[in-house]
Length: 486
Image (cartoon, rainbow, N blue to C red; front, side):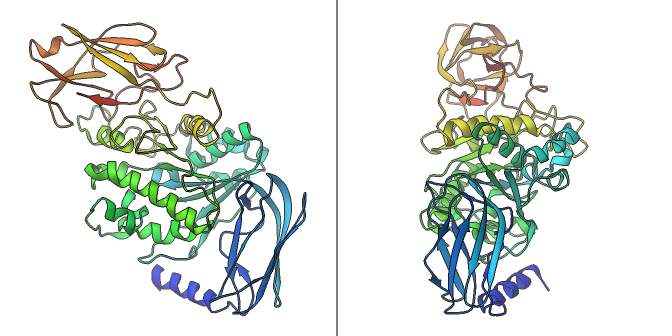
């Protein structure tokens, strides 16, 4: 039986009553995390038509909902707001049966999506054994993983669950997303209340597969054919089923697949997907998920050393809607982890899969603290130009913060032309001549009397060695993101 037919069979069976018993949707279970106050968690499931369902909580507080009636095979309850903590026992009762879930916590739920670098397992990172040994020390950071399934139509529920809600152990976390797990762990160290992590990602997939037809229509994209790369095929099966869940935010690591497919439209398709997810999760949860929930992403790392291809830098730029940084006017309440300084030339999983996911997750966490949790005085943006001055034989780039600089002959490039320069123009190296605490002076001698029409920084697939790019924040933690400017 095909995956699509199996999915439809399971869901049809549940809609018809599932043996005349009330049951929960696929992503509820023992050890789960539900979204804390001020939002209200949503629970839903299946049952015999006309049955009455009541949900009750017992634990730090007691809570009991008014009965709801199963309609068209579905019941749905929105709980009152619950403060972070637990554990709770949750009971779903009807005339026919009672379901009891144990060890339920309330906290913040983050969805983790994208392709293989998000799917990259914790067992594969640098110092994996040490990272996994820490798993039991974080019993309130709970993982859940959707199984890989596709659908040509939007599904109301997941076809399968790969990892049900679990208390973290080395065994469970070894198979879970490293970026997702480390992000949740680092967040817990700061917030000190439960974090629920929902992994739903698939290697080698473009943004179009995770986007609804609504989002794709905004960017006038041609339809794609071929397995899990089909337009909307993973939105249908691995995101749409989650929409009823109340969530706090999402993180995303994807873009490699779009270096070869619709790359010039990524500046539209990626922001459009974010907007559409926000609208859909808000509506699906009955307004409980914020309509502008925080969305963090990883800017592409590296793939091919000494490559002259501009596919990767082009996508990095498009990931920011051609602005160079986030949040910006097109991508509000977003945050980005710059990763182009974290190459891994000896990765046994291929250079496209760097093993240092700790720095990636840490940089994401800084963004989440500042953007998602409004924590003041948390630096999360690397240095970005605030002014570029043209002098007779040089250019001075004034940055928006104090910087740490090392010399480079080719990290900056200039375009010599009498007209405006773009992504496909001829660019030549521009050595760094000098610097101070907030600016860098760059030579324009390479233009040899011609006009300098453009400047760009780190516009390479693999611009520097590990944590060795020339420009960082003053504390040397946050790398300057790439930029291009006329």
